[in-house]
Every structure is written in structure tokens, then in C-alpha cells.
Length: 236
Image 1 (tube, rainbow, N blue to C red):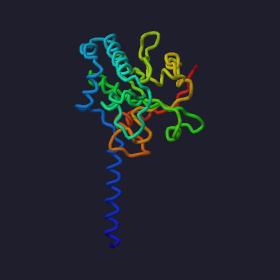
Image 2: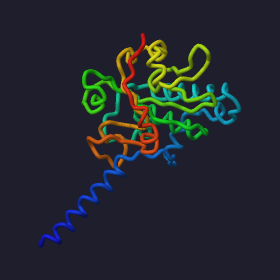
Image 3: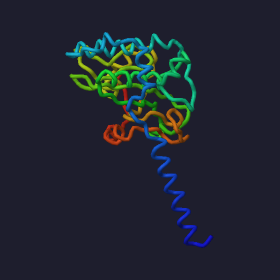
């Protein structure tokens, strides 16, 4: 192989790798037939079909949250190389935050809401780099756009981020002011926490076709909110 041919071959390899990486770590939010099949199993149609005001929104959101928690009782994580939030999650009868938040988001979308995926990661002396450190505590959850603004909807526990004035709060707001810790029984929200919108995993093994060791992102949500990435210090 001469030098010119080698350069051409090498360029093709690099380009192919870039294209594969782009599609492998991209998370799409469109609903498939299988997704809708899973959503129907929640049986919240009568609670979400006619939404006319904020109270109706809250009723629907809480119904979806309660239904997914009741439908899948097991709390053991399904591991890696899976398709999160899928019908397989329901059939398995077990799942943790990343499965539950994905199904919650897809269900909310199905009933007309705009959603974004939230990655929360404990931070220590490594700062934002803790998102890359295996074994650090993390949590996947959801924010939904209501008629009064963005509101957090927990994936593992039965609470939504409504303050005492019945106003919605994001996870960033609720972690900082202590609302999230007050509502949660987990103790997760007591520590400094990295807040990232649009990142679905740190390991590249939750959504096909997989690219291990690279984060899986919804590019639109992630890039649009990249300036909101920060470490939140709870005021508790």
C-alpha cells in the first residue's frame, strides 16, 4: 500500500469511527411502537387524556409516577447493555432510576408534555470530573415542563418538586434550597451534586448500539443547556 492509499484508508477509518460514535451515543426521544406498548401498561389514559390546567397536569404527572413505581416493584438495577425504559424493563419486574426515568419521560411525552432527562452525580474534590469516576453515586431523573415552569419528577421515590407555594422547581433549585432533601428519604440530596441536563448515562451501555465508556446524550437537550451544568451545594 503506497502512502497516498494509506492516507485514504486511514481517513475512511477515522470518518467511520466518528460517524459511529455520533450515532452510538445519541439518544433519541421519539416514541416507538414498543415504547407505546410499555406506556399503555401504566393504564393512566383516563387520568391524562384531558389536561386543561395546572391541577390536571399535576394529577397526570403524579399518576404516571405512581403507576411506574407500582407496576415494577423490584428495585435491583438491570445492569448494562440493555435498552432502558423498554418493555423488557417491565417484563423483568425490576429496575432502578435510569429505567424508571426513561419510562416516565416517554409516558409524559405521549400525553403531550415536554421533558428533559436529568443526570445527578455526587461531587467531591474532583469537581465536575466526578461524572467520569466509576462508582461515584449518581441518580437519573426527570424534569417536565408544566404551565408554571419546569418541575422535577423523581424516578425512584413518590415525590415531585412542588414547593409550599405550589410552585414547581427544578432539581437545581430544589437541591440548593433543601426541598429535594426534605421530600426524599434517600439522603442523596445532602451532598454537593453535579447537575447535567440531557445525559442519559456515563458508560455508553444503556441504549443501542452502545459505545462503552462514552456518555450517552440527547444532543439537543445537552447542548442547549450546557451552560446550566454546575455543582450544587445544598443549603441545609
